[in-house]
Length: 171
Image (cartoon, rainbow, N blue to C red):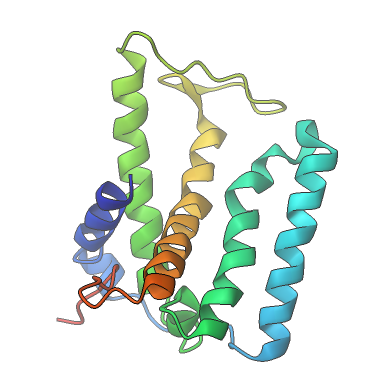
C-alpha cells in the first residue's frame, strides 16, 4: 500500500494545480501544538473504542494525530515541517495520490471474488463500486497515517538509505 500511495502522490505532486498551490494556513510545531495533537489523537481513539458505531471514521485520523507529534519530537520527517511553513503541497499530493489509489482499489475490488462489501453506519448510500461515496473521504487521512507511520519506523531504525517520500518539485 505505501509504495502505491507514495508513488502516486509523487506523480500527483507534478500536477500543475498542486505545484502552483499558494501558501496555506501555518500550523506551527510548538510543544503546545504537539501536545494538543497528541492528546486529540488519544481522545479520538477513546471515542472510537467507546462508541464505534458513531465514531468509526476516527480510525483513519487518530493514529496520525498520535504519531505525527512523536515524529516531530524525535526529529523524523513530518508533514508538520511543510505545514509549519504554510506549504500544503505534500499534504495535497498525499491526499490526491491516495484518492487515486483508492478509486482503483475499489474498482478492482468490485469485480473480484471474494471481495470487500462495505456496510458503513450512517453513510451507507451512493455507492461508487462497493464503497459508499462518503467512504472515499477515509482515504484522505489514511494517506497521512501512512506517511507518519513510514517516517516513524524509518526514523526509529535510522535507515541510512531511506527515501524521503513525498517530494513535490517547484519547477
